[in-house]
Image (cartoon, rainbow, N blue to C red; front, side, top):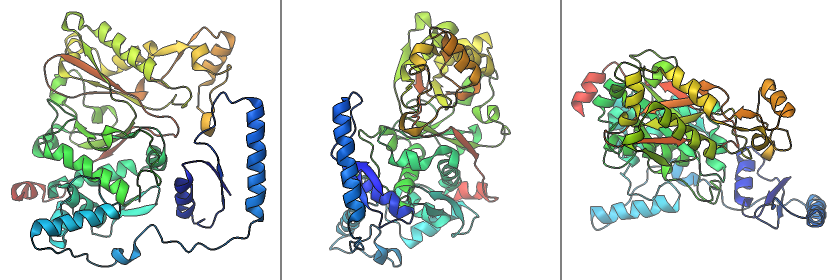
Amino acid sequence: MLITTKGLETNAKFNARAAGLEELKQVVLPMAAVPLKTEVEELNQLGKQTADAVIETFCRESVPSAGPKEVDEETTERVLQFSGDSYSTALDNMEKYFLQHHWSDGFPLVPPTQEAVSRMLEGTELPRDHVVGLVEPEGAAATIESIAINAVMAGCLPQYMPVLIAAVECVTDPRFDLRGIQGTSCSVSPLLVISGGELIEQLNINDGFSAIGPGWKANATIGRAVQLIMSNIGNVWPGRNDMTTLGSPLKYVMLLAENESAYGGVWEPIRVAEGFDYAQPTISAMPAISWQPDHIPSVIATVDKTLELISLQGKVKYDRFAANFGLDNMVLLTPTAFEPIRLERRSREDIQKALYEAIQLPCSEFFEDKEPSTEAGVQIQIPERIVEKCKANPQAFAPLLFGPESLKIIVTGGPGPAMLAYISTWGWGRAYFVMKPISLPKYWKGLLEKY
């Protein structure tokens, strides 16, 4: 049996169907959420109502569902055709149909014709039916062909296919917890980061001014294609199983590139820091729940001041109720913000360690009743030494990061005023920063020349 709160009925039924339990009975509580400060008498009354509803539902005879299936099976095995008195009218008819079937993000789509999809497939040597990963919550296979279809719809070029394939590998990796991210009520969405100066230049990906903004085809369409893949193959739609109460702008703009030229040889690129060879381009997915840049006035733009501002954001963004201790967080620095670090030749490890020590809170704020939070059944894994330290002295300080390596630091953006952004993650699931290599086809140079 499913016991859900009001407003989550469709999400519960969808996940039951995806698990092969379509006929599972459901009891719906008469509220959107149980208030944290509900009086005991109210909770007792709610418990009695729930128990009565459970008994009544169990005793009710099951009636097989005769409703329409959420997937239009008629359209999955045939070629769709749209006509009109002009091309624009036919295109409008396609747009309306795709929106009605929840296959669109609301922006105009490029028609995924057989010719366009075949052209997109030139970007990879893998066969059409090769499965890259299973897209939750539907658990459907993201094949090379289905990735290409969504890439066409998003307006991608064929040479973006290797990046898209690696991006799908990132978000379908179990460590990314796509099922949780797709269905949560939190405002979380993947933030994609490309590392690899030569590939960034070849694909004309923006790593300068407005690095996570409009105006660049690669940034806009690659991110859009990944979101369409998550929605269309994962069978996700707001209010049905995407229960994000506010949503996130990262669902529209979600790709940035590392500006590794700004490191000036002092730091290695993030891909090297994560264990990849320098020559290997990579893409990473970060489950991002915040986006709030901070300005560092030039008169105080020192390493110490930069660390202080980053640590302040880290403390504000930490959510003990969401149990996001032990997960990965990210810091974005503009080249100007990184300049004091470069001039002092402070290593990445040194800065990570300094931030690990600075991003701490008193144990009385870190723990709830001297015990780790287990909100929503998520048990945070706090090292025993920290637990014992806090039990002995609630006013002692506890780190909010699992370790220095949990904070990923990336330089991106253009010159000008020093800016930084602390990107925190959610915590209702065990989702991490996931990096994958981007594999280029043997005929890569010819592909670039052709397109």
